[in-house]
Length: 220
Image (cartoon, rainbow, N blue to C red; front, side, top):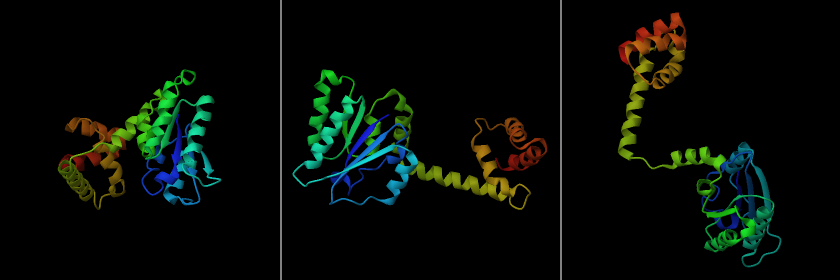
């Protein structure tokens, strides 16, 4: 559960909304904007809608230096008093660190965490509600760095494997089940002929399983 406050005037031209697809029905997304940044990419709206998170917007009423920053600071205070424990401000403005520090030293607001992050994805990783651990692991898994050489080799090997299985069943009555057969093979922990045989019958039925196994044992 998190409240995400977006300083849209500050991050509208960067990747501030990156990660909105990870929001869920328990989260609240609040976008603060002004007349100079009234547009948002359609893909973000689509992801926000699919996430089913609560969404609120505040448009700046009167222009003024740091006006939106004050809006955001006040909203943080309101949310903290209302019992929101996990709050993140999406902005590249370092001044918001003072808001985070203020909440940290307030005994009456004990347990309320306010973080500042450059985008939604980074915000969800640093918030620490126990119920959000699965989401944090998912984001970390998807954003981890990989070896270019190793991944190129893995992709090439996988494509060759798919092509081999596809050709093996080409023209057979099981040709339309090629995708399912590939998923079955890739999902097996053991690759011994015996387990391949029993697994095929379990997955496709006794008769079809035997026939599919006869093809697979030649190519796997």
